[in-house]
Length: 262
Image 1 (tube, rainbow, N blue to C red):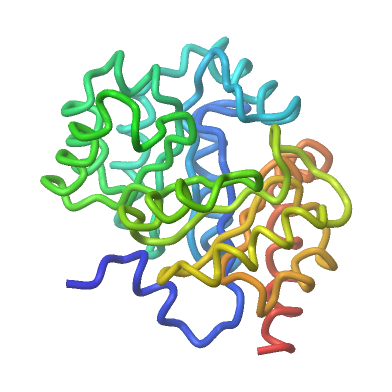
Image 2 (tube, one colour):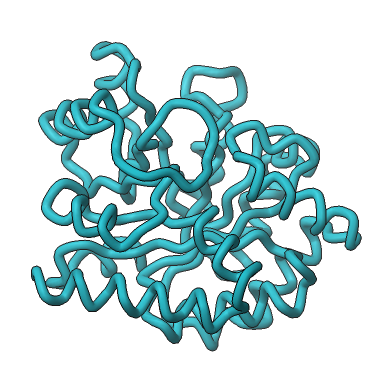
């Protein structure tokens, strides 16, 4: 049976958009409303980050949002409840993104099963390598709970390791457009562009690209290269400067460009 994520990639639209929200930033109600606003504006999927005290893959913008959310008293339980409350209103897939330490602290079985119960379609844990101790348990519970576990890959990965990862990958492959942390940046590094081509040659799944997308022109450049553009820090910056209307305007503009070229 096709997952909700598979259904997104069955659309004719040449490039889909996944937006990123830090749950609890600037407060829980606002982040909840932002998810609804992004879906209304035309996002195809939304990555909801469960805040963590040491978000090592995130740049200053998302890191600051994590810290603010935690200062507000945001907990994983509140994140789960938030998604449960809006799941029926949001017709697109929602994915939880967080870090391995938080998942292990909750217990892998509990984290995966409660995530599934609240209504997300998949999980992104960038610091949980497939060959680390405990991954087998994680993969087992993903299957048991009918959730998709997304692999995050970066340039510099050896070909043998890439092939091993692709054997267990599902849903889509999330490629970072630069090695390091998230954050808005102009242009794409050549090694990242080359890596996309390398993964495309071996992968049988849709490709997503994120880390640093900050303009409609960058989104335009990804059309026909990948299947999904992931936008995070830039949307937080837009929200900080002009609220959810600013965010919606960017999503709509990006979709207009995509539709013109589809």
